[in-house]
Image (tube, rainbow, N blue to C red; front, top):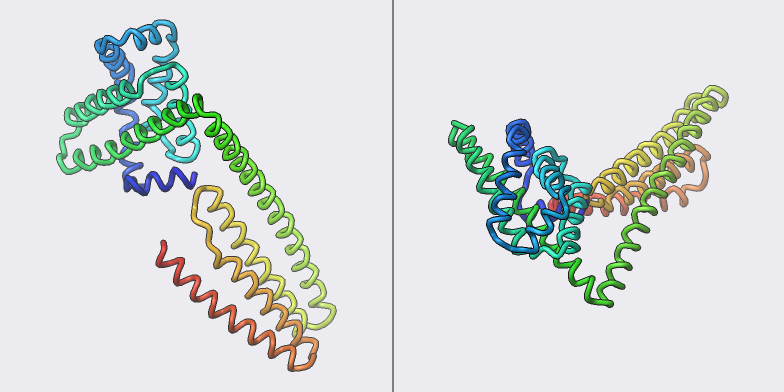
Length: 297
């Protein structure tokens, strides 16, 4: 998903653009069959015997074309959408269809869609915004489909590329599996900390409020950090950026909790000084990292 997010950033496809395109779904759905009919007539008119033969021998291509068209307006434009576009490019390569014809077909669909917007949308400003958003998404579709088409052709003829592609695929799947392991581990640890907090609350009534409240507060701080880690990992799985500041926050909270424990036990002040120095250092690092991440975002 992160790769697709970068592609959308390069084309400046915003959430507002996606919402504009999705608002057109009902309008396009009623005209989908006519659009696909005109597209296939245009393909046949090009006179390429290979494509004409493919249309005759693969009658399901029409349904695939219609499915792609509706998905263009249905969304969501996430990692699964990206994978579907990649598969489309690979299927075209496997069928031996020239990428030139893919570009021509995409241009024909673009022209038909622009005509529909011109006919149906009276507000010129709104119509212009819709066309700009739709053009961005069509360009992204053409970009991804063509790129995957070229990669598939290279893979078919290059042994080294096959090996590299297989290795990258394995690494991506392994990384996804490890992310799932991390999520389950965080869930398990979070449940453990919830149990620890409950235990500290029970002890609070047994050993006195002053000691118990501080101990329970330390457990609550760790729980808060784990929740932040969970949110960060979930955001990362959805394609968001990875923030290192969360892990610095974990270390910072851990030292704060240890300082609380040392204070409660009335141990030597030298130990407390070390914790104070570590907390000040980590606090400064945390502040610098947060500033850097905010600027980057």
